[in-house]
Length: 112
Image (cartoon, rainbow, N blue to C red):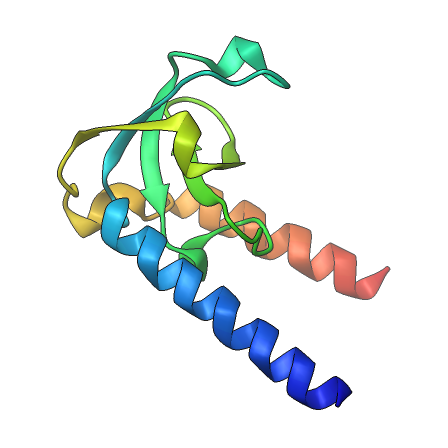
């Protein structure tokens, strides 16, 4: 029963992720709005990030957004306004320095 429930939950999460990706495709430009926990982020813009490219673990019912000049955040769809179509794929690729820093951080975490 436990395995069946876990498999069903995983299927539901996958379906929700696919549905959100049709509404907010990766690389789409969005603006954050009506946030109550982090109101300082209201009005900030960024790009939707596919979970495969996300720095954050999956958060059910949320869309990952890499803010302009800021961190990556998980946001509920109701707190996003779609501003434009997906941007070219390279827009979400980290710079060489960012990629190197990420690898170094991962290596340090493994060796600790």
